[in-house]
Image (cartoon, rainbow over all chains, first blue to last red; front, side):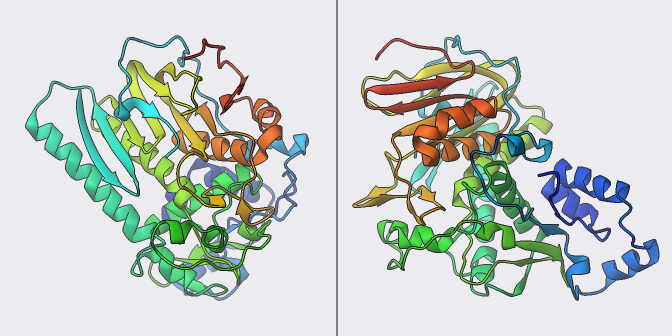
Length: 106
Length: 293
């Protein structure tokens, strides 16, 4: 997904970054590093106005095809799952199985 | 331990903290759970005309004013779509209705199924006149139910952890633990002959998706976006352990949809999981073999 044209515009607010999480912040940084040209003045003005066009779009999904067998795209760091940390063990403690601590399809 | 429970969304939600039992904390937990469920309903219920999601669904192809809170839930769903390359798709609202879910839930009549591949890529988010605006493609409707419960489990666990509690939030099978010492949770495949597995989490999550519940004649609630119909899967359930409930839920749902290809996909993503069906169990990652029930 390295060619993903996801747009996180300079108008992205702190609220958006909080809502979409750290991934969006990283993407915003990526775009900045790619020298997306937008002056601070115009960005600030856009923040104050109702959106008019795509320049103020802050999220667009990557437009590449869905291919579930494409191992290369699974390596894209922005879309990877985070496995459980090493503190997770499958030995099982002493706690009784109750509805509050049980995961089953519902 | 103190536990608050709530029965809604045709399941049971539980919020447990490690603390000496006292009525004040129990009441606070119950209030928090009820308030957050009500809040999520106002944001993202397909069955409430006054929800923000219903407003968006009423105007496909148009930018609709929403709150940043709604964007947070939608963003979690879009992240799941990116992670699963569209296998978990938030724009399947019409497809799940077509598959018969609404009739099963006592809501509406079904519509026609269709291929929904890639529709999620047409979703847009931008700043609005008040807070934000969302656009969904024409011919689609949002259904965030697949991810919303997991999102809520993560949110509640984090909120309580920041308040100083060790916590287990279990939103109908999407379960998140944040603690300082191991907290035993159970993965129950709900398949006769396959034992539930205890797992110790310190900061982690466990989710189970399956076709044993929310099932009706000719269908169930897990939609394959490639067909727009209930997934034709070989698994009764898939349980996944991951860092967050949102990740675990998305992977488990994708595992069900991918059927026989699910275990290989799960291994490629480095996730610990168990795929269960009568007479058939497949494990990935660290998930250990276990004796029959």
